[in-house]
Image (cartoon, rainbow, N blue to C red; front, side, top):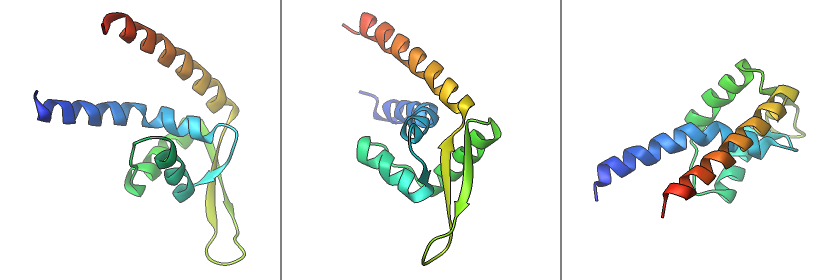
Length: 111
């Protein structure tokens, strides 16, 4: 087995699916950054660093897939909460459809 190749491949798969994962997590609920990272960790085996999440969230905002708002806290600093936009919901639906088609195709050839 070529461990280096597999490691690089896994990294590319993670990078390519991270937006899909984050949009799925944001479906139906608002999260602030750290909470979003913890939610992804809880439901997947993927570790996301803050240095990865925040640039991704900025790209998703630029694409009008998510929006954000600052929320004051009773104690401590305000938190930036993210949620899906209507376009984000539509895009996620398209992504899910594609993902299911891709998964079916892979299962057909993976015997």
